[in-house]
Amino acid sequence: MKIYDDKKFIGNVIRKARRGAKLSQAELSEKLEMSEKNLGNIENGKQFPQINNFFRIIEELNLSLEDFGVKTCKTSFDIREEFLKEIYLANQTEIEVFNNILQSLKKLNRS
Image (cartoon, rainbow, N blue to C red; front, side, top):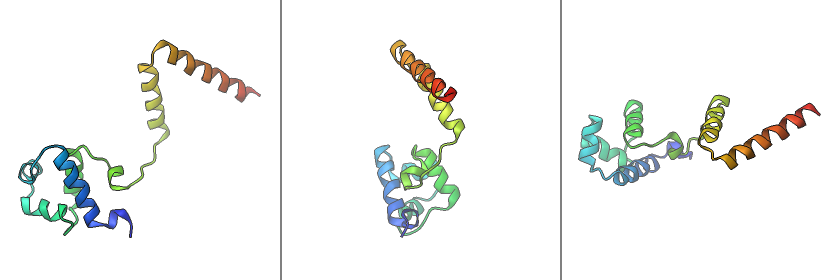
């Protein structure tokens, strides 16, 4: 059985995140405009959330698909954005290390 096919696993992830956010089922269901019974059934593994509710739950609880065992692939744009952020936040020593690495890579590519 795949993780994303497991109602109980999905419900447990949601329950744990809701509790971590210090929300009751009533509070979360109100934010999601979903019945408390429906949220309870999802958390107890009795039903899968509808796709629109699933994404609303993820957003409200600051979850990602990776929290549910779904591996996401990073695009070259994502990697580049992360790299630029690291450079932007780097101190002087780290910038010098990044520069040395880049210079070494350029030399390798010329060979």
